[in-house]
Length: 288
Image 1 (spheres, one colour):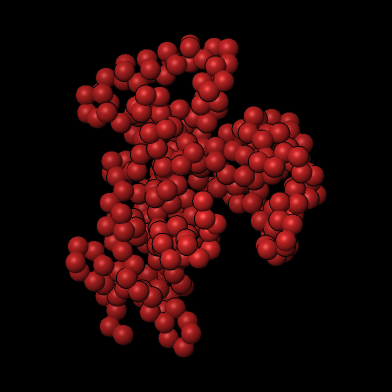
Image 2 (tube, helix red, strand yellow; image 1 turned 90 degrees about the vertical axis):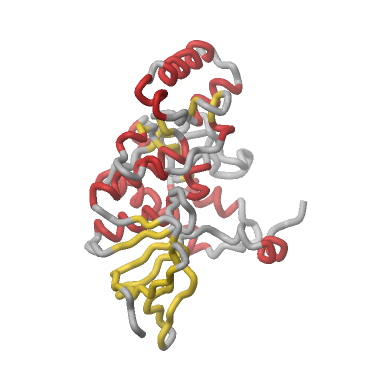
């Protein structure tokens, strides 16, 4: 194979999974990492989303004095899976390592979350469930913390903005939805911050403040910029190159030009699930 370039690892996809993988690789000593994405914006569906992550026993809940237990979390997850579709060892691996992963990111990157006190487990009547503090959302961040990548960051879904313009956190959204005491003052403050930010208003309609999934991706990109981890947009993974059952690299296409990239340590596929594949959706997802 005539390789055009060599990398330790290429990560396909710039959502939470891909960017976290790239940062963790770098922090654990794998420095020559490249992230690619076929879209012209970074963040994928992670940036569009509410950005929530479900992690029992997380450090942010503990900082607020909330007590949880591994045993209750395990009982809850197993109760949601009565047919045993997910192997128990995978459930245990997640519950044991997710808090450690969160601590790793908190200690080494700009990734920060807030504990959601009023976000209950979906199946609240099952054993081990909790009424809050297992779900967390990204801490808001100014997109101007990013250098060149801020303008290429995918915006959050319009439903997560007031009047489609002023972004809000999940906690703020809860206040508005139930019209909790102080919701009018909160709305006034958020609108004032948005419209009085004249430098930002003169250049773009996009708010300086990023929330929800966009904030999560922005914090990961901010951390990547400080480490000079390259991100190539409009770059699609066309095929994987294998030899004797081992992935040796991949073929990418950018602007009609194809490159063969050798990957000495592997390829991380973080380009999403099968939601983009109609055949797989029809085969494996329940019909309406």
